[in-house]
Length: 296
Image (tube, rainbow, N blue to C red; front, side, top):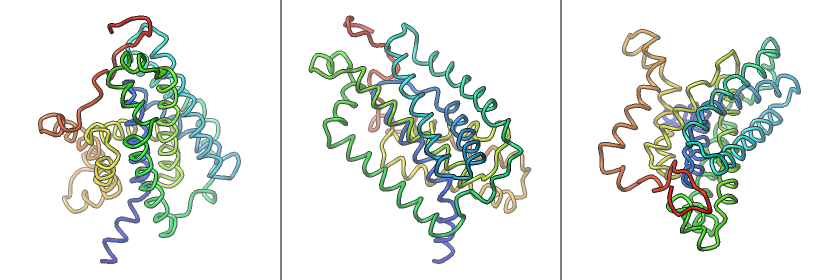
C-alpha cells in the first residue's frame, strides 16, 4: 500500500501540470473558441516561470508571472477570434509560434543561472498539496460550469452564440472571461511543469506537453471529472516512462514517444467510441461569430 501511495505522490507534479492545463483548455473551448495556441503559450509559461524564478529566487513569483502572462494571451486570443474575420485555427496556430519564439527570447538569457535552491520542494507534503489543490480546483470548475450562471453562459455561448446574445449574454465578455480563466490554469500548469517536475530548463523545454494537455481534455470530453482520470493516466506515463523502458528493454527514443503516442491513441479512442456522443464538443466550437450576423 505504501508503494502505491509513493507512486501516486511522485507523479503529482505531472498530474497537476496536465490536469490544470487540460482544465483551462476545456473552459476556453466550452465557450466556443478553438484553442490551438495552447502549446506555444504553455512553452512560454515554462520559460517565464523559469526566468522569473532564476532572477528573483522565488518560485511563487515564477508561478504568478506564468499565470499572468498566460492570462494575457487568453484575453488576446478571445478578442481576436471575435474581432478578426479569420479562422480560430489560423489565429491559434499563429500565436502558438509566437509563444515558441518568445519562450526562447525569455529563457535563453538566464539559462546559465541555476536556481536549484529555489525550486519547489520534492517531498511528500508538497506532492500531496499538489494533488489536493488540483482536485479542489477541478471540483470548483465542475461546479462553476454546471451550477452557476457564469457556467451556463459559457456553455450557451459555446453551443449557440447568437441565441446566447439574444438572451442578453455578452459573447465577447464571456469569451474574454473564459480565455482569461482558462489560460490562467494553463499558465499554472506550465509553471508547475518546470518548477516542480523538470526543475531545469533548456531551449524547447515544455514543447509538446501543451498538446498532451490538449489531448487529455479532448479525450475526456472537456469534462472536469473525466479529465481528472485522464490526467492521472498521462501523468503516470510521463513520470514512469523510463521505468517502462527498463522493464521492456526498449530504446530511450521510443520511450520518449510514449506520452505522445498515448495522446494520439486517446483521441482516436474517444472519436471511435460512444464517448464522442456522450461528451460532445460545443456545437459552435471554432465557428466565427459576428454579432450583427445570424449565420457563421
